[in-house]
Amino acid sequence: MAPPSRPSLRIASFGFRSLPPREGSAGADKFAVELLPRLAARGHRVVAYNRGYFGEARIAPHDFRGVTVRTIRTFRRSGLEALWHSLRVAVDIIAFNRADVVHMQNGGNSPFGLLLRVFGKRTVLTEDGLEWERDKWSALGKLYLRATTALTGRVHSAVAFDNVFAKEYFEERFGKQYDLIAYGSDVDYDASGLEVLDRLGLEPGGYFLFVGRFIPDKGLHYLVPAFERLDTKKQLVMVGGSKPRSEYEDGLRETTDPRILMPGYLYGPEVHALMSNCYAYVQPSDLEGLSPVILESSFLGAPIICSDIETNRFILGDLGIYFRQGDAADLERTLGIAVEDRRALRDQAAAQRAHIVANFSWESVVDAYEGLLRGV
Image (tube, helix red, strand yellow):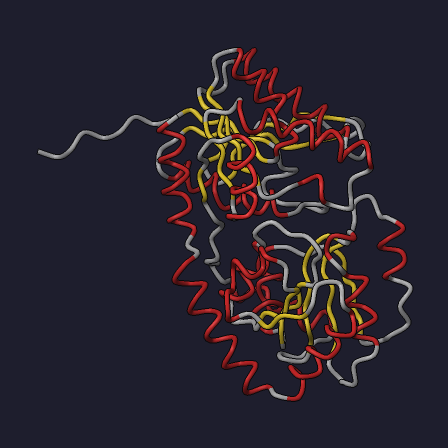
């Protein structure tokens, strides 16, 4: 006799900008686009809440890879727009009984987790780091994020961290055990994205690559001057930006080095094509959670050069090509060594990829989250 099938869950998810990712999206959106459709494919009824804006046309609920996408509008104001969106989402979930278990990202949403818990919803939070340490937040924003840690540590049915360092901080502070669930690395490569190389005038193996938001946490103010001093004909492609455009991004774009390209936001097959064909991927961050860009780039065969912060070391261990965090001169030196010895760089990339493939699988991530969502 076949074992009885397990009942499906009604899951709502928020705390990201857009499913699928759009301009201004970040790691939370990447996580959502990998996790939520996979949960839906396993038979669960999943509702995802996109962030829209007043003044934009209303977007009707629609399907994305089996996930029902609902767009809740908010106003455009850094920091506060996310809080107003999350409050409206929580009210919508409660008022219309959209789900029994709610998945949310970022501890800044924990007050809305408390509201959902009061109305009988189970909540699972994904936390990727100590958010108040990020330079992108104002002093008031950092104070708010510190204050919400008490709720993050106590009110949710479960909390999952993507790195052991943040997990240990919360466990020591609150005397509780939390879950450790990393990101996956596997990518369904689509060769149609290769057109982007011709469009940008790039040759395979002829450029270094960065992908992400242009914010101080990412350390691009080390990367640009380090590359400007580098003696090479290779290019540097920096994909992404800030939304809305910031003074920090304006400062980066003031470079007069013709080898540095900033093509704006790119997604999906085009980004994967750039990762697969770059000379090396560079992540100069001062602060990161578990970086999905490092994972995907390594999976696609790119050598990874990154700052020696603990979360990067958590991913790559002894296989990383590291420079001292915050040290542009050491980054320049590391890039120079990479340029001089392509064979050693490719050998290191092969070792990095084998490690990533063995340890970071999206199916194992979904297994873990499905078990967590059922267990609460």
